Amino acid sequence: YEGYLLIDQAGDYLFANVGNDYVDIAVDGKVVSWRSSPGNTKLLMNTAESTGVTQQPTRLFLTKGKHTFRARMIQGTGDLELSAYWQTPASPDLFELIPNDRFEVRVEPLQLAPQIFGVEASKKNTDDVPLLIYRSAIFTTKKIGQSLTRGPTPGATNTITVTIRPQFELTGAKKSSITISGLVGSMTPDATLALLDADALFNSTARWNAKKASLILSVAPGQAVPADADTIFKFDLSNPTLPQSGASLVQISADGDVPISASAMVLATGNAVPLKVLAATFVEAAIGQTSSSPNTENTITV
Image 1: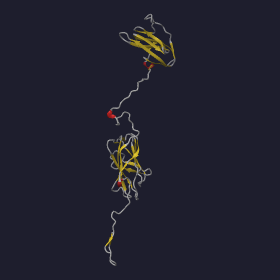
Image 2 (image 1 turned 90 degrees about the vertical axis):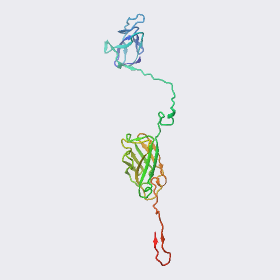
Image 3 (image 1 turned 135 degrees about the vertical axis):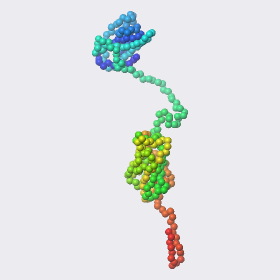
């Protein structure tokens, strides 16, 4: 055994041992007690020439703190034992077993030659590669569009539909939230908007910021937006009265369980482009008369 002996009081110390068979004990590199044959009596020192004859070593002065300690034993036959005793400045006439808490193991750094570990073929190019960490997770589905019935109507209440699927689930336990930005052109002022058809996955309302043209919704406590299925939710915005081409870049991001940096959503096409508003027109505009004769009654039909 090699380690350290912890001394909490500076002074003179005397060491002895009980052991079987050969034993030696050293402190700070100096042998302070040894025996060459088994015995249960506390032995200070043997002489190599005359087994069993005891030498009386001088006490060893130790400073307060940590000292190197080594204990060795060679077993011959029969029982084996090694116990270390000392007389301390506090008990100079009594040998006591050195308490276990006076020892500290010396830890040597373990040096291993570098080794190359291969990744199982079945795990390559998958999320199961050991210690694979994405710089940012993604939404594998991120679509947005508007109602075709009233969506492009000037001044109408426009229902926006969002379909998402995160790469990793987003949970309410981690206070996950989703931000959709770039919904430029709505006349809706700053408000708390009701979420439609969102089941119980999200808190029932979301925060709309008119200046930033963004919506922030939070995953409800105890709920999770799954990574293995699409999630759909809707909300209403107010259209302007004048025509516009609609949002050109709508982005989505998330935080909570995993960071998902902002990325462009897939916009619906045609009149389903979010916040596209058409100019009001007459779908039928025709006019006619009943007579072209001079000085006759003429009925105009519109």
